[in-house]
Length: 131
Image (cartoon, rainbow, N blue to C red):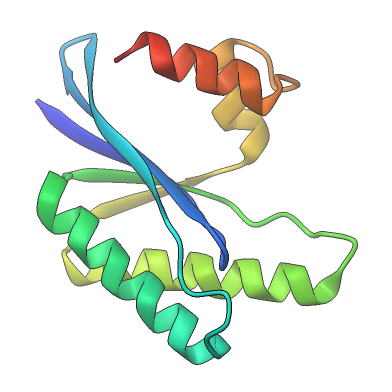
């Protein structure tokens, strides 16, 4: 049995979903969003994200993680913030010695929906079917 957490990092919102996989049978355990305060300083928001990740990891006790790989945005500041949030999420996982795999957003969509060009709504619909 594997308990898998998927993480979509962001400084404003970090989404997560948790599955328990036995053989080829996935079972939905939970999902949610960590939302650091938008009015806090960037260091405080990163701290809140780390604390939120620790709470989620304590609650679900995953054994394996998949974190979305950073892609370069048009806005360099957004790319930097995304990279920092991603680093905090990976640090929280590493602190609990959880193996981390990094995949692109295209690969996430391909794995869930069957096409890398799927919309967020299509991914959410398939995810809801696992509940």
